[in-house]
Each structure stands twice: as C-alpha cells, then as structure tokens.
Image (cartoon, rainbow, N blue to C red; front, side):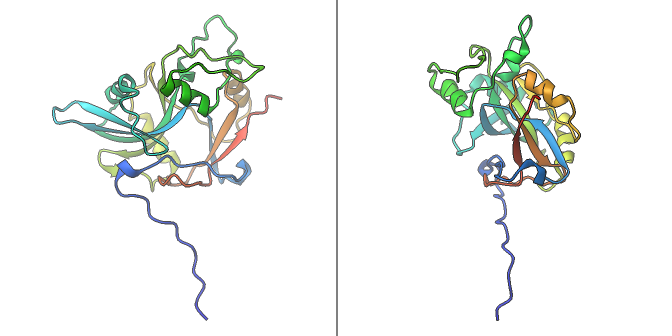
Length: 233
C-alpha cells in the first residue's frame, strides 16, 4: 500500500513580475483565524513594483489581477506612487479606486455608495458613462483615482511573503509617504465594535478578514481570506 500523501501547494513565483494579488476564498469570515479586519475597497486590484531607474529616479509598474500592465493607463498615478516610496525597492498589493478622493465636506458621507469592481474598471479604462445601481447614492466619478496600499510584499530586495500579515502591515506603515493620491488602508483587530458602522457611513459595504499570522500567497489562487457584508443594524 502506498503511503498517503498530503497535497502540497505549489511554490510562489520567484520573480515579483509574475506575482498576482492574493485572492479571497469562499469560506465564511468566522473561519479566519486571529483575523485582521479591513474595509473592502472597490476598484481595480493591482500589484505595484517600485524600483530605482538608471538615473536614480524611482519608477512604478502597475500590474492587474490578470497580469496586464496598467502603467500607461495610469501614468500620472504611477508617478505619484513612485514619488511616495520611502525605499529603493518595493512591491505592494493595493487598489486603484476613486473612494479616497471623494469630496465629502458639506454632504452626508453615508450617501457615498461603493460601485462594483467591474463598473469602476470599465469607467477608468474605457471612459464610458456608468449607470450606478438604483436606488442608491453615487460616487463623484470626476474625482481623481488614488492608490490604496493594503499589503507590502517586498522591500529593498527582501521578500516579505513568508512573514505574518501583522508584521507586513507594520513595515508598510513606514514604506510610503501618504498623500492625496497614495493611501494606506486602515485595519483593526477584533472586536470591531462601532467602527464597522463608521466604515459603512463612509460608503463601504464589505469587510475583508485576513489571518493576522498568515503568509501572502502571490499566485492569484483563492485563499483563506474572506469577505463579509457590513450590517449597519
């Protein structure tokens, strides 16, 4: 009788150019061990690679979930991300989204509705008009597109994907200079309390649950990360 063999996950690609954003799985959020909880951003999920060019200036390359280069489409934003880098070499996971740049002064922030990822992607790349879901409030789609970093995967040539998420979060806080077009996502450890209501009032409709001690899986395959709707009641 042949011995039973446990299925072993394939090793991640060595070249960061081949890395893809870690995907959410189908399990419920209660199955995530010792979670970190973040608001779920809308928009386009990307991997950002920042490195120093021949002249010493930083450059950023944006790659979407399908492996397509989005740098030219978002050239101005790519320049802003590169300028925000506080290290010579960074690889980041994040979102291209218009949510952080909404003008909320003088209006009810709870009227900001999150568009679907497909809607934002079509509007940003195709330039077409989007019909938001009805009934519901709308985002101002004329606002600038920003980058929101959610994870740090490499810094100065050292891969971080085998480090616990909480350690990567700590390093991420010191890797970018935050500004209008470059942000770092907030997060919290349980219990989340009234913060979920605050995020809901700002337009978020889902929470992302990620294992605080989990490593990063840059293969684009479903993982143990989970999404959960925000219940405002």
